[in-house]
Image (cartoon, rainbow, N blue to C red; front, side):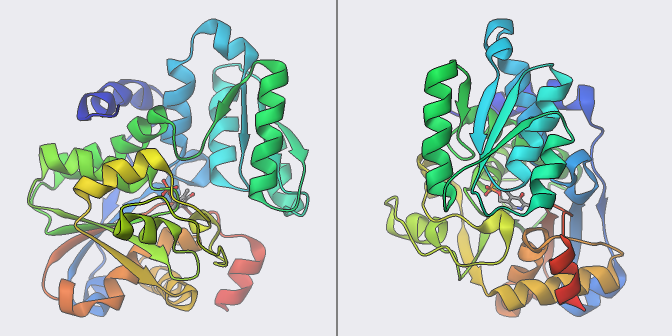
Length: 314
Ligand SMILES: *Cc1c(COP(=O)(O)O)cnc(C)c1O
């Protein structure tokens, strides 16, 4: 269903559009963390997040005919932006259903990329049901943010970049929402850096992926985190099936710990991360017993901090 070969194939597409992102180290960050820390900078991508790799891979894999019917998705953030960005490049219609209360700035950012935004329902579940209905009517492809193999393949290319350069890592920490990024990381690590532990990090305020991984079943949990990229209320089947075999550990951190990690990235690494983009570092800081003295990569998955988020960091 999803293999290392899918990731290497996706790289051909991704690198037509995007150069590899930087991997940097910062002495002040190492000192604060008590470890040798490499930061993978997906905050520097177009649309400001790693998900753009998945969107491009999905659109490239669609037939001309499927592209002409376009895609329908549901999201409040980076998943939608990534699909809108890729759909513009591949000249395909793109519709995004968002909960009616979604921040107007988020809808605007997606419309600016040429996609159509439909506001519907009280929450993401209601938006999903409406997206399913629209896809059924129009014949457009319904794109699940988690259970879409092309998205795993595309986002996996970021782990090719890291592990080819640094096969000697002790661990890599990856923030988890639906789990596309973390599951792809396990598949690439198994081939290129088998001694590197792949560790997921989620907010304790939205722990559905963590609890699904731990219990071996797809579970639903309250979804209360203010960290947009990590806000999912259920486990997704495809990434969970991949993470089950490959993830070495899965850490939970609080939203306040994530905010502290955002501040540390700003002050030691010249980096404005959104909350989800700082969650991997928050996981590292939360467990000095696991990471002191080791060589660790943290994936800064995104930089789309909105105005209220920046204000809260003070
Ligand atoms: C979507 C997202 C995540 C979580 O990724 P999944 O593949 O859904 O687990 C983490 N960080 C950012 C910035 C995101 O947009």
